[in-house]
Length: 251
Image (cartoon, rainbow, N blue to C red; front, side, top):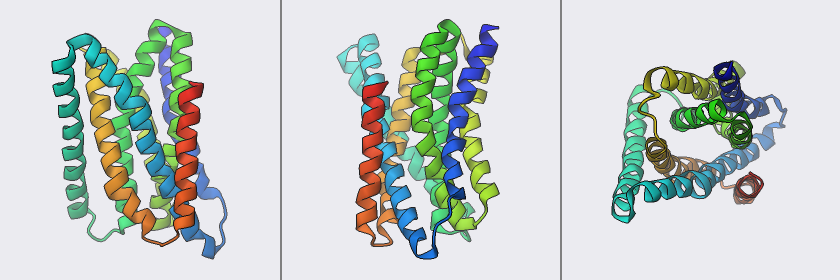
């Protein structure tokens, strides 16, 4: 029974990304679409950078410092972050080769999806294991994760929808990112429960932080600046960082 409850909590947290994807059903006048895309991309990059520097990296490095001491902490944290940067560059190259005929906006949406799947897998493990041990703690963690998964859903759905004009594809890609959380949690519990430690999860989350910060700066920011709508760029970033700070202090 505890397993079912823990899986349910992890599923709700993961699939909250789909709620963010529903933003594509809002109607915009044609001359406002570029403003919306600019603001959404800026919002997304603020969420990605903000979550990485206020949540993923600080908490994970603290755990590594506590478990290994200062020397190994520095080496492990730095190595994980650099591997994340290398990995996202490699994924960008693969997508450029595989999707030559697709637009840059579509490729950006796919990269966001891949980055967030990698992000959601260890989060799913953490939510599942926390809920399995202590349901109240798991629910609190799931609420925090759901709160930032919603804007992450926006970062996947908006570029894919405006590149393909397909709500179905945009929502499906958002769903794939979200479902990675409970699936990853369940598989990890079945096959890797003996090997999952807070240090391993921390290393993965630092790696994901490197991926998200790099993607935000090198991938999303240039696309957001492309339309020369700086007012909406700044508004989107301001709302995104404000939301991250709200999540940080509330949860």
